[in-house]
Amino acid sequence: MSCRRLRRHTSSIFVFLLFLLPMYLGILYVLKCGDPIIDSYIVQKMDVGAPVEKYKTFLAVLVTTSSNHIEKRDAARETWLTYGNSSMFKRFVIGTGSADQNEVARLNRENRGQGDLLLLDNVHDSYSTLSSKVLHMLAWLDKNVDFEYVLKVDDDSFARLDVMEKELKQRSGESLYWGFFHGDAKVPKEGPLEDHDWVLCDRYVPYALGGGYVLSADLVHYIAANVDSLKLYRSEDVTVGAWLGPLSIKREHDVRFDTMNHSRGCSNQYLVTHKQSEDEMRKKHQHLQKTGRLCETEYRKAKSYVYDWTVLPSACCKKKSGII
Image (cartoon, rainbow, N blue to C red; front, side, top):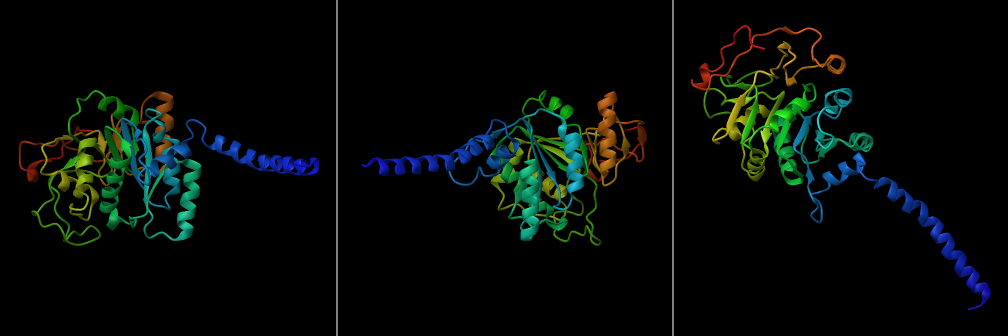
């Protein structure tokens, strides 16, 4: 080979290496240890292609949200989602089955920045399809994450993840359905919550209110294993209660779950507080950081009840004063 040809060959190799070097360094940067965006991408792609080791966590947190609830998600990210173990699996769940390209692109940009969205392209996101959303997000979780418990919570709820995680670790691996239970709910036959599909009885079976409840992994696995056979009803919390109705499990009613369709007030003992604005979340968080207490002032706006499991569901839930 002539010297001139050798020089040209050497120059070509040098230019090629200069082209590859930035790409290689970029890949190393993106794949740096613990990058939350990459971790999120890997977890969301686990069910595609070759098997990948499941993400391992003790408590998973799935927050049902809508694509346009950015302010609610940001408030949760700044406040209660900072609680608990750093390895805790936390995702906002959004159905994108009916979303247009611009909406999906915006959500993908948000996810690249935050790394905490679970986008389900087989779910159309609306209140009427919320039961389907919960079904498919639990099936996804069962397939892709190794967990002991999951907290399903709404994006307008404030949750004490640190306290819940600590209490759950003291349990003995029981089949657990934990929340604030309703047993005497009549089936709406008109209005926005009308439910003509419910034909099992004249009332709903006992269920934990949907503002926030906890399921053990074995119950999620049961739901996931029967995903194609389970009946969907109008309300997701009612639906989960119906799915688990025949099972011999521990249903634990806990007044510390303030999860009705309106908040009962503020108690330093509350584990989940539903129907919170972004400002209320930030105030609770700031007060908790400063004083270790959730409430500036404890107060009650509505009566509560201790569920009586010894009587028929229609007589289960007698509201009384003096209960948080």
